[in-house]
Amino acid sequence: MAIKHEITDGLNEEYYQITPDILGSFHKYRPPLDIFVLDESVARVSPYYRKGGRLTAEQVEELPDLANEGVVFVSRDDHPVYVKHISYQLDLVLVDKNLKETEIADIFVQALTRRTEELFEQPVPAVFDKFWRDLMVLTEYLSQDIHRSRALVRRLHREHSQPNHAVNCGFTGLALYGKLQVQDFEARRIVRKNFDRLAAGLFLHDIGMSKVPAFILSKEKPLTGDERSKINQHPNLGFQMLTKLDLKYPEVEACVAEHHERVNGSGYPQKKKGDAISFHGRLCGLVDSFCAMVTKRPYGEGKEFVAAASELRNNPGYDETMAGALQMLLMNDMKMKP
Ligand SMILES: [Fe+2]
Ligand SMILES: [Fe+2]
Picture (cartoon, rainbow, N blue to C red):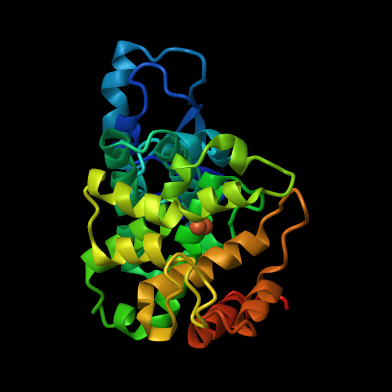
């Protein structure tokens, strides 16, 4: 057994060890990637199945036992195929002990971006349920160790689209929440359902945009007054949609309804001021602006993360403590250059 561990430790750089759970998630006869099996007598892996082929009935029977023994592998060269595969069955990231934190972050980016795209196209309960299931895998993963959120923030999308923006806000908002509540996370005092609902609010804060005509959103010329007021209704439109999605929770409502309010009263739709804007509303507002600044737009390149955060810190529209924490998160914790 000790010898096997020594061998597999060395192999981990080049191969993923496949657990029975992961193996069971592949197509039974036609797995989407090459499979290797460790031959302990020569301490080497040898090809067992080539992608595009077909496993024999005997192999199909034998493989789960081999996986149980810990001798089934796939190549890390197949990383893109593997990431894509797991992203369709996201709960596997919680059981696969062989994935690195950075690989898991890639999988979350892919899975949640796809789910968010589907949801913005069709914001109905059946699509929402699938999104919610994957979102719960993310919150479970982060509540085990909130510092894992940094690998997600390093992977923010730099191209703008509504789903990309939603994912960016989700990742950044959860990381910032983790920074602000780090002691509670470390003492395991975070109430899971509140964390789950905040996650949903951050991802869905602009869900009302799905009700704004597409031609307005894609317009590159300046908007007319009428078009602008259509867009400005999106917090209210989104708020109304929450009933249909069965999401009438204070954390979600605050993100959707208040993310354009500003602490100095310069925001919309209600021109709320200071503490009249809830904690979650202020958090989402800050994160929303940050994410808008760091992505590429038709009118300009995205800003550097730290530069964007310092600009927000000096802007009287935002919660100063939160903006300071965001800047610290990026500069100190993530060691991003100013
Ligand atoms: Fe918005
Ligand atoms: Fe937004």
